[in-house]
Length: 290
Image 1 (cartoon, rainbow, N blue to C red):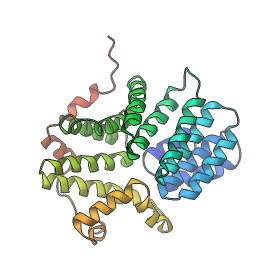
Image 2 (image 1 turned 60 degrees about the vertical axis):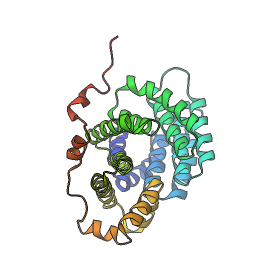
Image 3 (image 1 turned 90 degrees about the vertical axis):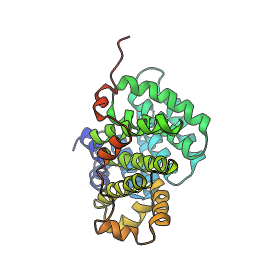
Image 4 (image 1 turned 45 degrees about the vertical axis):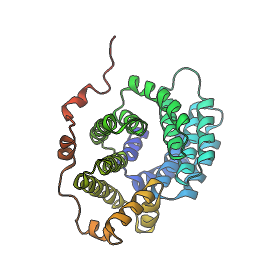
């Protein structure tokens, strides 16, 4: 397996497969630091917090003095700490990652760390820091023209703006994440859209979006070993979302989901009902020559 193939596994939510490939690749051969960072992030997505931090620490050691490898290791450490709600430590690791990068070049790594910083600061309630990191990261994403990073940027931006423009940003983010085959981002976007629908009294749309988000998570969970299942559902913001669903739909909602219950409306039809035109998506990410 190549590093590019590993990156696709992560984007597509195939965390168990990624971890199984990354651990032996990290044990010997070239690119050990990168493979170990992959192992850290895969373990974090599976809910294995202690293992994720251990891989991140090893990745940092393997990075030596390489600033890019060091930034990737610190990014992995920051994401693991965020999943454990250790926000101050997470932000400190991400700041160290940014400080270690050279002033020029490595824009993709810098954008990754900046967007992670923005999301961590948002979760920690540090709005000013989130806005600053997102402004810098969003500017880089515009030039990188990476659909997943653009979707992530729009998703984060929507949490800092009024509901009406935010709804369209979220819908655009969903379409981009869908095209990039990024289910982890897709379900979180649908969750935020369901909250917007609730604020405007659109209860059916709220419930359909919630069940569609749960459906994506359920498919992700099918890739997880039984031993990791409980930790998977408790990992990071998944725990918050599941608790919200339990309060809204009752304690049997997960059983209902497994039996095929849930939304009856397809997501893109819901977004159209909200006023989003999917044909506008090709314009996103286009560099303005002016």
